Image 1 (cartoon, one colour):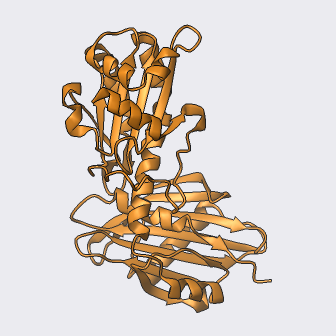
Image 2: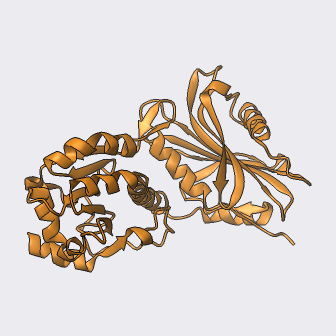
Image 3: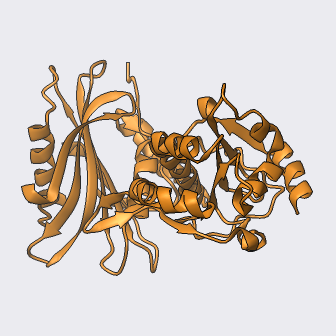
Length: 352
């Protein structure tokens, strides 16, 4: 299969480290629809490494790529699994693959990578001791494949450890694209988007499955719910407040989230010990972010949330965008990501 793979590689979009774009994509995807769809299970990263590379590298690789996110518990976006290169024909169309290649080695994984990308392997030496090649849709649609090459084992591991955040971001960017595709595949809620543009100083590209849950135009609040059987309930709300000077702060955001929960979500509340408060960048704004767990003491329910507070100087307007998930049966992280993707379409409108 090696020669065929080289041809496939030449046809795919190859991105070297300096040119990688790892953020969520626009919805006009660059996916190659002529190729078969990747075989799901996008939470798994199928990893191929020779014995020494894996023995010395696995702890750092797993610690970084299997990083935890707190929802109502610690959840991971990805798990790293080592597989035997002799079975690559079984797994090469999966969503995420990672290859570690010691160019000086004659071991099976390194030999395989050198056969797949001989030109890149040939550039490795004293002047370029290591590099990374990331490919999108190499063997299947919506796929991310990363090759890391080093002139010897030491350079391979050194380069890998120095670029673990970038490696994670490439896989994360691919997962955001997959989730975004699912979120917007049914289309847009055009009626509600038109309403927003006519009545609010903002709008967002609301997917068709999101419907109004609470609307209080008098007090500048609207909330949407996406409810699909056997999937997490997803709530997205926007609150806005005229403000002559920027008084948005962590304290303002926390207090507003408490008020919103009490007034519109039947008494939902936050406990300080369950909430992370941080400075954040959101859509170009210097924002504050809260994330963690919400709970309702009356209904004995709870879930995870993330919200952002920021100030629009031109409008003299403070905003809070809140994402919340309710799903007692299972994991919530990808539902929270889906909400963030929709929230990232938020745009203000100059009513003048």
